Image (cartoon, rainbow, N blue to C red):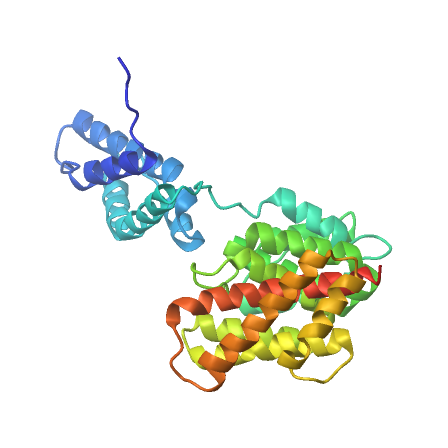
Length: 358
C-alpha cells in the first residue's frame, strides 16, 4: 500500500490550525498541566521556525525565530501566541506563493542566507592586503551605514583592534542585518578604489552578491520581472554610467508602478544610448539596425545570431513607435517583457563590445 506524504504546505497549514485551536490553561491550574501546555506550545513554535521561516521575508522570519516559550512560564506562552497570531497572515501568504510555484512546475528553494561564510569571502576580496580597501576607507563606509541604520559596529576607528583589516571588515559586516549587509557590501564593491585597484575581483564579487542574494535588495523589482537578468544588465553597464542611470530610472518607475509609457521611453533611450556609444554613431536606434548586425558579426557572432539581433531590434523599434511614442495606450501585461528584452540587449551588447573584433 502506497502512503501519500503530505506536502510542506499541508504540514504548515495543519500547524496553523493546531496553533489556532490550541487550548491554554490558567495560572491557577495544576503545575503538570502548565508544564504540558508550555511544552506543547513550544513544540508548535519550533515546528513553525524550522518549516516556515525560510520562506518568509527577512523581517517576518526574524520575528518568528525570536519567539520563545519557557517551560512552566504561561506568560511566555501567551506572548508567543499573540506574536504567532500576528504572523499567521504572513505565513499563509508565503505558503500560498510556494504552492503556486510548485503548480507552475518551478522548484521552490529557500532563499540563500547572506551568512558569515560569504561575509568572510567578501572581506577577503574587499580588504585584500595590497589591492583592497584601506583601513580608513572601511571605517568611513561602515561608519556611514552604522549611523544610517543605528547599528553599533565593533571597529569604528582606525587602527583596528583586530589582527588585520579583513577581520575588522568581516566583524563590522556581521553587526548588520542580512539586508543591511547586502547594501554595505554592494557599496564597498562600487567604491572608486575597489573599481580601480581591484577591478575584476570586485566586479565578480558584486555579480555573485546580486545574483545569489538579490532578494535582500530593498529596491528589487516586482515578482513579474526576471530580477536576475535585470541585475546582470546593471552589472555589465558599470562602464556606461549614463546608460545605467537611465535604465535604473525605468526599473524604478516599474517598481513604484508609475508612468508605464515613460518607463518604456526610458528603456528605449537606454538601449539607444548604449548602441550609440558602442557603434560610435549618434543616429537614432531605428537607424542603427544594420550597424548592429555588422557589429555582432565583427565580434565573432554567427550569421544566424546577427540576423536574430537585427530582427529583434527592428521589431523592438516598431513596437516602441506604434505603442509608446505615438500612443498612451500601453498594454500593461507587455511591460515586463519589454523590460526583460531590453535588459538582455544591454547585457549582450556590452559583452560583445568587450570581446573586441574577431
